[in-house]
Length: 336
Ligand SMILES: [Zn+2]
Image 1 (cartoon, rainbow, N blue to C red):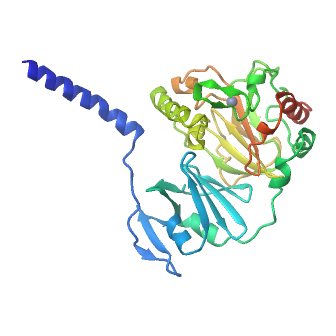
Image 2 (image 1 turned 90 degrees about the vertical axis):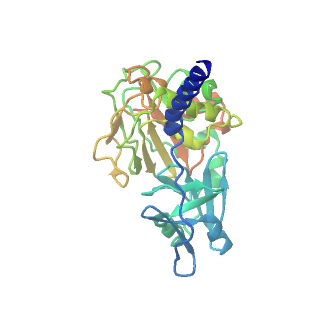
Image 3 (image 1 turned 45 degrees about the vertical axis):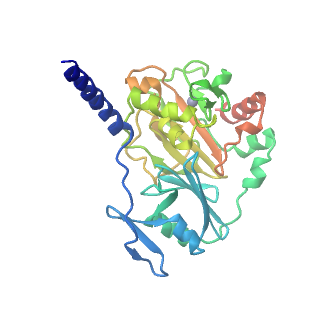
């Protein structure tokens, strides 16, 4: 009898472990061994109907330089003077400081990065672009940065930059052992009621490079799983986990190397897709709480816009004091 109950416990425990595994660790699909060669002898791999190229093959053949950052799960590639950065599960990549969209993300497997054919063609056909302002921007004073961003208009007219410092970029986020990347727009602190009826607007003329029209909300369990991995990563939440925590997003590439991510959206108009050109004042989404702990519970709490601003792919806020960050953001957004 004891043996039977013991076996029952073992079987129940085993069954309980199954759904956990299937939710968090989908079976890893591997690209095939080389299935053929591109003109020039570049080995091709196949996964489903898609063709991929192994970064190691491309490096060995002297076609590109590159490396994978396994903490962040990003892959940097250099070809002549062109620089590319790809990220796990992300349909945008950085090209000489500007974001571009791709149909299929790169794969990070077997200690290498696999580039889908469409992406590889972009890398292969790249030619030297004008040098970016990247180096200059990273040494800007607070005043110079404010000036650089001065063409932007408010994403939520009638509100102002939050009076609460923890809503500013650079604020500590202890729950994931990290730092707040963006600027939060809650009802509290911005002088305007902000809820799911609040439209968020394009801050200038730009190109939509990502629009999460088919977003699926995570469960609390799933979210906690990613948070636990994120907080163990030497104090730096990897980008691909931050990406999950941003919820439903729209990414817009503006001029001057400025890229904005609108996060936690509840809705995105159907017309806003990767490749859509927008102008200042166009509605690009509605405020929500997707990707947050409230979003996972499908309640109506914690509604806010989280707005990330990157310049030539750089997160620059760490260069400034809290007072300087506030001065920069208020000078840009409190005019309207
Ligand atoms: Zn935020």
